[in-house]
Image (cartoon, rainbow, N blue to C red):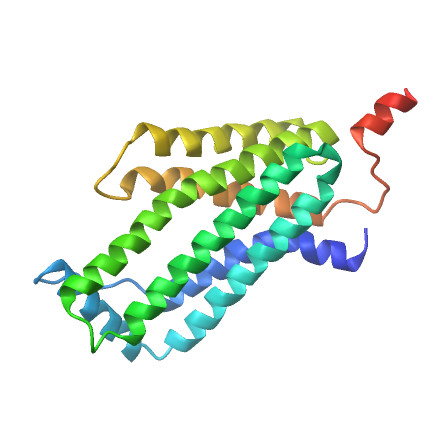
Length: 223
């Protein structure tokens, strides 16, 4: 396994670590009274006064870059699974687009915090929240089909592959079963399962020994 391959493999756990560090640097917002939109604008002012705000943004950008690298690396390792790997790649790309769109909305609200009314701020943040819900579908597709491809190519082992398929199905099922929810509380735990799966398989692939891995179809033919 080449050094660049290990870099791609560890990019998954890097994404998880950087996203958590960035969120920690931003900090938790204080609760207060007022309209929801005004509370959002007050939160943006708090972030602007945070000396770690620029560092937090830089870390979150690096987290998104790490996720892009991980999706590319993982799907390249699963390419022998055919359409399963392709579908996983499409799901990963859709999740990346959803993440970048969400980031763009957050940046827009932050930059225009002094110029937009509370009602518009609430609407923009609402779009961001809806995007988080839709991410369950894209991440569910990514994890489900990547795990199925890994099971076929024997890339991750049966336990991690079956666990990933269960997590992917759960993410999609939660989104479909809840209809149009009024908050994001239902979606936190499936998202955390996805994040945990990404971190575990990233470490699993990063610490794999140097060896040539033949596709399952080739192994079966040789047998």
